[in-house]
Length: 409
Length: 172
Image (cartoon, rainbow over all chains, first blue to last red; front, side):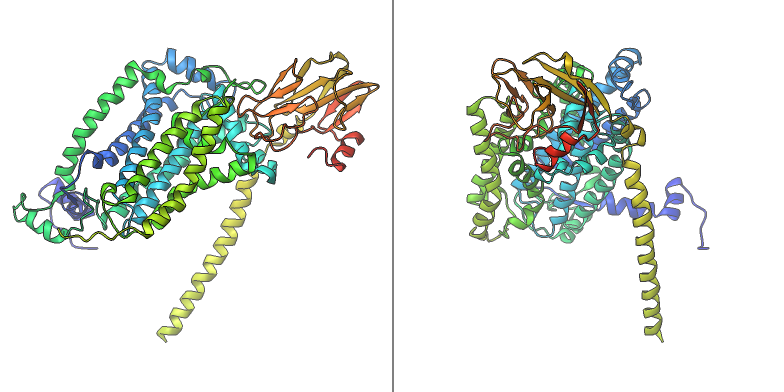
């Protein structure tokens, strides 16, 4: 047994036993963040806070929700909404949170793309972040099943059918995933398990990994400048805070984050109290019916772009295009051949590539919501889907010829 | 000596790894796979008998089999016959699983045009369940396993007529 002195404070007592001061130093007071950042750098902590709110509201919903095809719809739409005290509040927080978490994820992702924050040394940050995007997508989908309305059922039908692999006709696999010939009781209960336990566990693990991958390469900055963190940290610690290029994560960077969170949560709770229908599809207020497809099936807004890539093609081509679109972003650090870590507006053609990507994603999102019957929109959908698929090869070529930026400062 | 120990440790480590992989991967994997399989009670409920004598020409009848909608369409004399039709006496019936072969939405029957139209992605099938080319659905509407018993169909059982269709590659 190691030797222990009598502790004079709780902090000292904890420090002796789990190295509290070392932890605080490594994770907070001496985890250095560049000064040259803007409000977009707060999105990570905004996401962490939103995830926390989803967990808390989820816990309260869990106490009355019933994962049974006969009871699920009423347990949500009657028990939780009308009977449980403030049940409506948890549901609306959970619904708005699920929608806004994707808005912030997209902002967070495109910030990373704009400033080149996925490049040499930071590849794992990007990869673990994409892992989180996939895990959050699975979490959103499995959660969408639980109210067992018409959109739940038919989204479940369509998405699980994707696993038949088109002409591979792997219906055995689809039935195995469902535990039934169609989405039924076994299906609802297993997606309930995934939504409340397994996927959240994976998400928490990935968040820890995501934070871990950030610690050594450090957060990027607005100019993509390479910073001598030790030198800058010494300046800060010596009291020369003005001269230093960095600030400690806690309390300085966090206090900036908390301000951005404050603004964000005004929007969040405005939506929760005054505009909650934004996250509540009216079609899902009809109970699931396996013998009646809703006139027009579409996913929530955050999946529309990938849905629109699936839609304009024949089944097999659509599935392949969809698969590529889902996986393509993972490879971004390896498709981008330029060594420049710099904001897009300093990277020549990359600037146009970035804004073209934004336009394409927004166009696909808008078109994905429209019914498939209009030939003009169908053609536009095809054009933008093909354009999206070409963005990868285009990036590879333009970044190969990108001029190297000499860094003076 | 030290080297020899290291090799022995490596061997023990690998032996443990291999056993764990086979044991946990195989055992737990198989049990996990079986747990996710459809239950026997779900499979046993997979048979439905439908009476075709109540069908009226050009009026779509929808029955339920294994949770899926089943289309039954009695063809009128001026509708084109097809090898996919089920013959009861002189009456021709189109019987299929009413799920679009693209992604599984239920197409609607348009009486006047004699087509099935899927609202999800715009797929079209004719009154024999054949897909219109150039649209998302890759194949005709599927015919469920059936057995003819007088004017009745037992869905889920494979009768000789169904086996013939299967052999001719008319359905999967």
